[in-house]
Image (cartoon, rainbow, N blue to C red):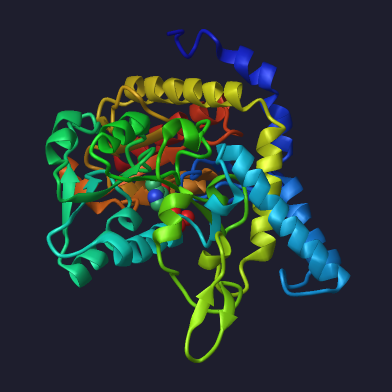
Length: 419
Ligand code: PMP
């Protein structure tokens, strides 16, 4: 592999990162009178002007409820909402529109599956298999399900580099395993999991697989047919789209057997007091007025991504990540990176000997640098590595080497302050 430093300006210039940065108005903001350097992309990404304009345009020119109106604005809102479904389908290469369900986000999508798949398929003594590196939103919904059904949660261990131990995974699959639910890319370690292989192994035993793509969708090309996963979930706000919107992709065969998650308008075809007939997919799972503008904005975020050279952009992110790792490792003797998987994305979670991560975050904030400190909603990962918290930089498509250099110099100031 090329060393990150050798290809320094080639990628940035070819991809025109400067132009991409201009698409994101917030990057011009000053924070404590310093230019904003945003390294909190795993928490949420910024929005390109195209998305912001679309959201404003929707409220200025369209704003109406969908599916039920005969008037022009309602029809326009409906067709833009449904067009976004088609954009998602193409973006992740799903087979059918009926397999794309709009939710509030990753957390909501996982809760939907835990509740609905749970009611259809899980009983006492069954097992759900997750991993040690899951976000709380891929732990707690399964614990709630286990509490109500008497099923058991099993956990695949990880090694000291933060990689799944695949032999243990295979050993943990049993005739009682009813679902495997695994994160695509870990938000606290950066590990890219071999999700295609994971699905293949589970499918040999006819076990469905859910992939938490909250950090996968914006850093890799996702093809749900190629992955052959049964469910893939993600949030709009981590894909340069609005908050409060997300996607549940599910194979039709499974979605059809699953009962509704919530009852209400739009998810029905006929209601009487004696019996209600549910709507067809995907509407069966979209009760009530959805986040219409969020869905439409997500569609625009997907258009935006489609307009970029994403293949090279993902390579660029990877090289930027290698550059950051090298810089961090070589600049600070007391610095430990938590998560050193061979397959890793642009997440640098670290601790500095004798300095609390919150202090690092606060000092960097005064330099205009936004990072995240804490447990990153992955407390079991923190326990596994024996740390209460880490400081985390997470990269996005608009970050640059100059920003990494600036962060390294600013961390030197943290050392100065804390001796
Ligand atoms: N899973 C992972 C891996 C995440 O990084 C996150 C967000 N940090 C979530 C799930 C939850 O996403 P949301 O809060 O958008 O529902």
